Length: 398
Image 1: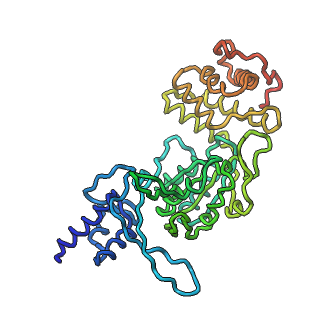
Image 2: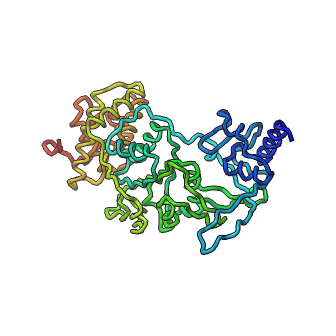
């Protein structure tokens, strides 16, 4: 058979899978099954490369949630035994999903300002080593965004999954689904991240229940078993796990973070280090708010300074037990965006405080009028006029 015929045959074989992308393992499987050599002319061609070990299938058009039209014969990895185990063969059909085809490198957020353990995360993720990290801290203080933005800076693939009490092993690792009358396998986000050497961020991990034990082997950085299909997944270089949580896996005693769970001690022990993420320093938070205001077309440095001073006073009062709520960095960003729409300082603050109970909302609004002399409670929307402020005169905590 001529070289041209070999090329045509190989392209026909990979096109027959019905996939838009193909891994090097699948290429090896196809070549072995058809007595062909690995086509280096194909794997070395830059325009065919989609990523590490992943290639584009030319001249195929497949919907994002399509299935392979032919079965690939693959060798099953041998588990360690006393004597050599025979190599067995199986037929597999995998669902091709959006996650496996899209660019997983996140975009850089222009308003992001690094702080806290950003440089430590940069060193860990940049090392390309498997090194799980647990990040704990108040809601809305930039835990998940810091991981995402490090990946954006380093051009690393980033997969983020948010936990719920209902999240189970199938949601995480993968499961069989019915597609066009046929049962096919769909990798879960953990498996996709491991295969692609991505940074896996498990957001709000303390919302997960005890079924998180399925991740214990994954958290060791070793090959892990997909029990439902008897496949051993060997994580690609660069794969690691970062978990974020509002607690340290011990539950929430004050009820502020309802439905968080007490995580298994053996599970928590698999995280070598824990970062305690605090609020951004005032100087950093002012930069964040100023950037957000500027991007909304409302450059107002005085407003940004007042907002951060106000939020800092509330946080100190909260820490001293004087109030039950805090103003997060995320809520300051919400206020900046609301100001961009309404062009009114107090209205923007008021609308963003409406999620709190009446007394808290009234006291927070009253405190802001003490910080910013340019606004008055008389300018609030009528139905939310403050009636019982908690902060009075010389009690303002700054």
